[in-house]
Length: 167
Image (cartoon, rainbow, N blue to C red; front, side):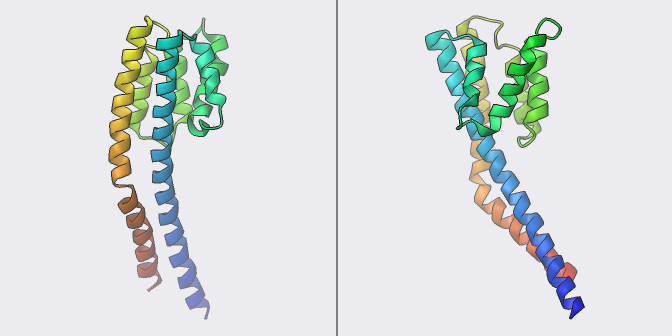
């Protein structure tokens, strides 16, 4: 009986690992979608209303920005040491620190955006944001296209490995 219980627990543990990996992929896609939404808001505020960057960063406290809100709030908090560090460095540190769910390519795209925010005129900032939105949207579409099949694959793989180990 104890061998059977151990085998069931082993299979269940492997299945849970697969489920957690599938949820991680889903959270990554959701985070990318949220980032793109915030960047669109940022572009619109910079282009049409000429809103200062600090006020735009406050918008990340809205409830619909749960994932990117932590990163942007980190940038906002670190703005006090703006004289000692450049905005680009503060932005990059915050992206690395708070956006662990997205891939390295997506983080690098966001870091590149940080080097042009607040430096140039509104049109150049909007162009940089548009370029970033385009790249992140492409990554999101690729990730979202395979989301369902990857979720099933990871759950099935976890279950299969668990059953193989149990046998």
